[in-house]
Image (cartoon, rainbow, N blue to C red; front, side):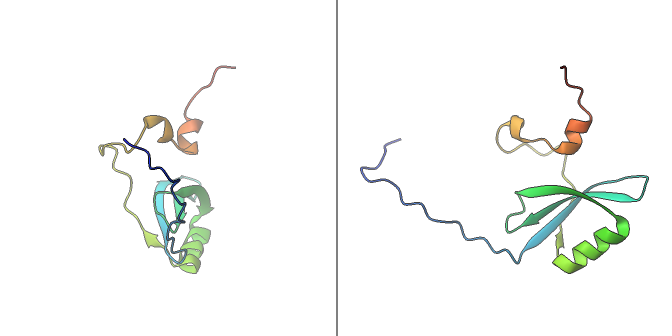
Length: 96
């Protein structure tokens, strides 16, 4: 791949912060909902956990669009080192 003689100009991405998504990742027996919340880009999210009542209120206040659950059989995008969550880390034992 050839490099241009002039540096590329950095152009900020168009992000619509009015768009918000939620993907439920789990429901716990103690009444908590585990979910991913995204603003502007559904691929970039934070992991959250709220009671069912707080989750419903959060979704209504943010006017979220619900995303389907992750498909475990879908091919991964990018290196697998980046495809993990804090929930995955709780299931892993690390050696000290």
